[in-house]
Image 1: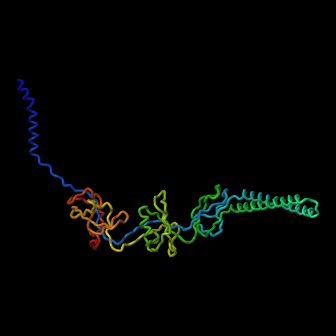
Image 2: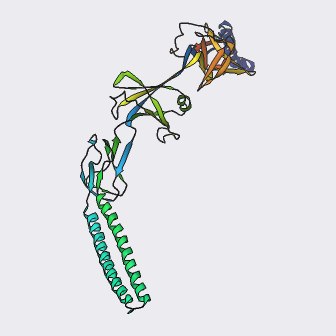
Image 3: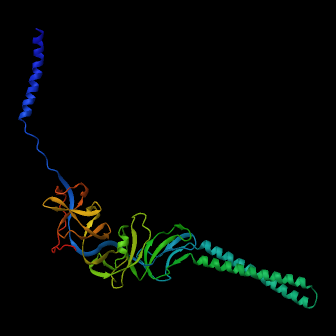
Length: 374
């Protein structure tokens, strides 16, 4: 009876095992999936263009002055607006002159008092000289009167200089333009109290203009050596004229992290107005056509440089000769030819004969003429 009960307990388990074995024998073996690597690639092209870059900028005056009062005070009058054409000596703003005029009057009163004391000392010296000639006073008394007169004269000179200085201060209450130009900004308004030297008006001098652009730090040294610089206005793109780099800032702008470059506009671009948008183009060519690839396209193995060439969806390793660097690109002197497709990303994960899938559809077209770089 006990054996029968054990047989009833084991039989279901045995049936399950046998069923699983039967199903496993009937199932098909798992198919092996083919390893296809996704990569990025480019079609090689031969070109004699070494540098071709464009940057947008703004037309500015070469000389722009930030004018301010030499004295402090309250602004009571503003004579110009942004865009106003001004002449040399034209009044731009004016301060309240009352305090300055009072100081000038005080300096004048001090000068008059000093002149009175000097005249008195001079008359007294003359009388004592006559007494000395008659031997009524000693030479020491005459020397004292002479010293008093000289001190009074020196006091007159000092107060006269103070009066002239205060007169200049009173004249500084009127701000005038020191050049012929145009007002580009007004930084203060009527009623505002300003300190000496605070810029209140910006005036751009008429004459030479320039385009101000910003270059990224990886392009500064390359573009510095480009001789062919051309400029054009966004409003008139058909009129292209030659420009000249006047200045490249040695320090990057703290906000944009670019280096400010100033390009002189020739007089032939007379339609250029301040604030207009302009384009600066840098262009240069090499002596012979070159093939360039990104640094990421190179594969290094045993001190040899190679690239992965894609043919029929399969890669093969091709040794290349390097002719130098051009920024973030490498110039290839041999081993490949225009029109071939080269892997530019994922080179360290490939092996010869491996199938690849090129990501994206933005491969550049191959040039019409395909010739091997020698």
